[in-house]
Length: 331
Ligand code: UT7
Image (cartoon, rainbow, N blue to C red):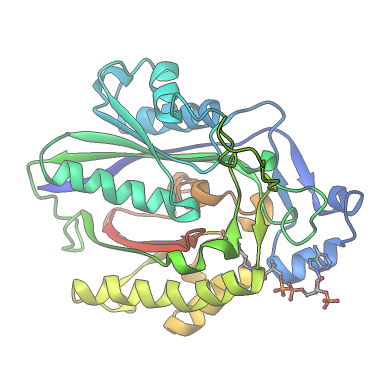
């Protein structure tokens, strides 16, 4: 059996917000943001929602895969910023696409969400429950960001990326001898560090609780704790995933990493002793879009023709939870 990504797509809001725009909102500079994060600008919703962006990305992924919406078996949306608690975003996407035959549900593992959703889709396909899945990461973080907090508002952006994953009975051997498809996945969590990157929902405030608790509805982050976690956990889980299938970092052509900070990506490359040229980046133009960063970068790199059949990819990221994961696959 081969379980492989056969289409990718992405959708970004039209509106561009530069570091110079942020200089007018908080005490910061373009120089500080670029030096500490690598970000120059990001896309911010001007009305686009998590579901409309997700549906836009899905349409492009389906088109690339040569499929129509009525052929989709499963829609999995990873998001931590849905516009509705009910219904879930995946059901909204199902409606927008007209994918009436698909099962649909959301999954939240913050910035690791796309990886966790991809792994979940893999498990369903491998078990023979579904033949294909649309796997999406979509976020409108701009509504969760405190635009007075310079420690977080400079980092995040809005957008969506999608991958169409299909199971086929036959093994597909590429011209370099590699077998196409998903090879290995690793995912993990450390709930004890949950509060270093958090965003509260409504507090328990039912009719039987007299004292209402005040809570901040915005993203709160201990940036340095998250940074330490990422630079340790991401290379460790990539190494773990490769070890499980007897591969070395030299066997990997592209490392598609969560775009949170250029310095984090550079540190991962250094720890793995891999040339930074194997780590494509788009954080400069679109910042950190949480679960959307990996599929948007994958789509960009795929559409540019940089990924060739037979290339081996590692997708890896980390995020609130704290969560982390890595997937190894041959294109
Ligand atoms: O998807 C996961 C999302 N989260 C992450 O990936 C976060 C990972 N962490 C980071 O990327 C970095 O920790 C940050 C970019 C958030 C911060 O960079 P840093 O090098 O860790 O800076 P810092 O927090 O140590 O702050 C250094 C200084 C402080 O001033 P003092 O105390 O030295 O006077 C901050 O108040 O920089 C100040 N600062 C800023 N200055 C200008 C913090 N934010 C800003 C800002 N502009 N936007």
